[in-house]
Length: 499
Ligand code: BES
Ligand code: MN
Ligand code: ZN
Image (cartoon, rainbow, N blue to C red; front, side):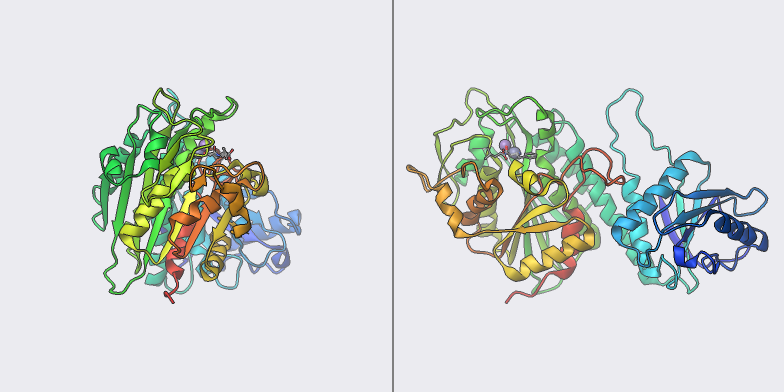
């Protein structure tokens, strides 16, 4: 898909001209670009007068205009909105894409001006959303579902010459959505193909030509050498060997801050000996969505080369119940020496994260740590698919992440990290147990992780409810959402100086 910006001109030839109509503009006709021919102009005016776009978002109206160089005009009633919010833009793009699926054509044009609903500052957002909505997982049907939308070029028309910064923003948006698509592909791939080794293979393929990011893959032997007893315990029940992925980007800027991202990479979570019920167990192929998001962020980082050092760490394992699987009651030791009594083998995410966090914090001495994980069903009970839970030990970091969540519409909601919850994790035989009891499950999971970040400014983001199959977001469709990629890329632009 190509997105470009140019000046409008009379006689421009287009397969589809998109014109948003808001209620206040109905009568004035101001929303009609003045370079449009008198005939088309009259047609649009008459249609709008007949249809009276109201205060609510309306069904789009497609005008066929066969004699003109502008073949079709799509009027979208945007109600009384004056500002383009992300949810409104999502609705508009979804509407445009549904129309594009039904008609022939390649080139779509969209006028933008700072007096209309679509401003110059919105161009990147429209491009980003169009690109997100075009994502399809390739799937494995013998007759594959192909993208029906044959449009291949979007041209934004704006009066003042398109500045290079607009072009840069479009390019950055395209990079971000490429990273998002990569994360979604990783997460959507079934567990038999997306094993820990499969994940490593896909990431290797992706970063082969991405020099700015250095990839290091470590195996079970390395984990043994590092005494990563918690990560190894989770992997013990599977024939699939575990891996620890490290992806390093170093900014050219001296004194750049270092951000460490850790993503849960359970390629399938059966629950282990504490086996899960059969219903919806297939969804547990998505249990590496946090890791996928981290890999996606690193892909975009390689393109965008921000002024921040970023290290991505993904502990990869399959949680199964083979003969050598870890059992309830077993005690294991994480690489920082903390002992853990395993009460429930289905609380495996915190185990792999514990070793990955402790190892990474010690090795990279990051200024900030953020982990992303499909960690608990309890966060789904609390927030459903509308927000991810944010657990953060640093007020400034928390504030910035919340605002990044709003802006990217990958929303976060703050959850507590009070020490009052620690009692639920006390074990009679070890430093900690991996189960916090019935209540406050997402909080006790976060409290479990806390001793492994060594007091660093840290945010834990529980994405169990937002990582796949979200409702009422037509652009995202079924399957993996790539939640976290846009959020964290936004965060890279806002990373605060260390106190
Ligand atoms: N991967 C699951 C959490 C999950 C649940 C992700 C629903 C996506 C949707 C995690 O490993 C898990 O099994 N958590 C248990 C923890 C419990 C045993 C303490 C849970 O939340 O039930
Ligand atoms: Mn589990
Ligand atoms: Zn899990």
